[in-house]
Length: 436
Image (cartoon, rainbow, N blue to C red; front, side):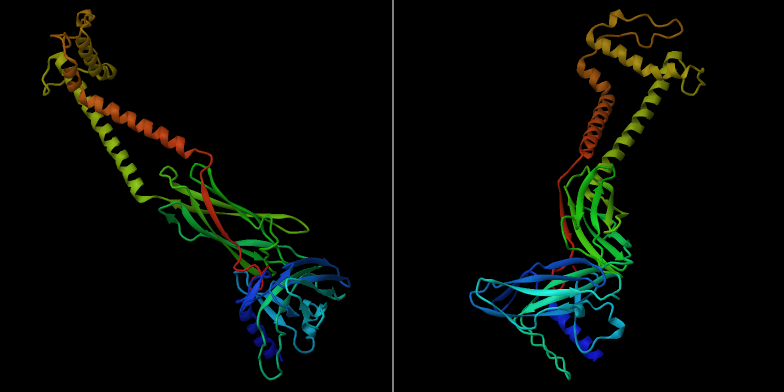
C-alpha cells in the first residue's frame, strides 16, 4: 500500500507539470477554471472551517467536473509541489499532519452548464491533537475522476487544476528562516546586466512568505534599480523545512560613466506573529572593456605628458639660472633659492609676452644681482610667441580637457536615478505545479 501511494504521488506530480496554476487548464480544447486559487487559513485544534470552491465552465457546452482532495508537499526549490492522494486506511504516524484527511468534499460529480459557474462546498475540521504549524493540501478539479486500482497505478486523467489550502494550526508555531544564498551568476560583466539567485530557507514549522526588496547601487552609492519581492501578492510562500529559489535579472542603462563595483542589498521581512528582518549583500563589477581601455589610455598619456612637461620645465629653469650667472654647465653653480630658480621660466615668459604686446620698454630694471638675461632685443610676433611656447599651450589644452572630462564624469555618475529593467521570476507556475 505504501508503494502504491508513492507511485500515485509520482504520477500526480508528472500530471501537475502539464497543467496551469489554479487558473485555467486545457486538454483538446477543454478548459476549466477554479477560484480562488489559494486559501490561507488559521484554525485552532478542534475548530472547523467551511467554504466553497467556484468552478467556471468557459466552454461552449456542458461539462461534468470531478473534485478530489490530496495532500501537498514541496518538491524542489523552484516552487513546484508534489500531490499525494488519500489511499487506504489512515497511517497512525501521520494522523496529526495529513490535512487532506481532515477535509470533507462531495464525491459526486458536478455538471456545469456552458458559460456558467458552480460551487463545490468543503469543510476543514482540525483534530484536537493536530500538530501546530503549517499543513498543506489541494483540491484537484478535472473532467475525469482520479482512479487507482489495488494492483496497478492506472490513472484516468484529462485536465486538472488545483486550489491550494495553506492551513496554519494554532499553538507552538515557529517562524524562523534565513537567507541561504544571494549571489550574481558571475562577478564581472562588460555591460550593466546581471542575473541574481536568492535562496531562502524556512527553518520553522509553518509556511513563510518573505517580502522585501533588492536595491542595486553603483560604486558611488547611487541607486540603480530596485526589485520588489512578493509584495502585493499572496504567492511566493516557502513551506516548512524547505528552500525556495527566487531568480531575477537586472539591466541598467548603458553608460560609460556607471562602471566599477556594484552592490546589491536584499532586505526581507517575514513572520505573521512577529515580523523579523534579515538582509544580505552581493557584489559584482561592471567594466566595459573598450571604453575603459580608451579612458585608461587617455589618463596614462596625460600623466606621461605632465611628467615630461615638468621635467622640461625644470631643465629650462636650470638653464636660465646658468645663463644668469654666466657659468658653464660643467662648472658648479652657486646655490640660489629654489623658488627663485623655478620662477625664472615664468619671468622669461612675461618678458616675451610684453614683447608681443609692445610693452617691452616699460619693463622694470632687473635686480642688481641679476644679469640682464631678459632685456628685450625686439618685438615678437604672436606666431613667434605661440611657436616658442607651443608645448606649454599643448599642456594647458590637455589639462583643460581632463578637467572638463572629470567634471562631466562626476556630473553623470552622480545622477540620482537612471533607467533600468527588472525581470523577476518568483515561481515557475503559480498553481498546480507550483508551491504557493
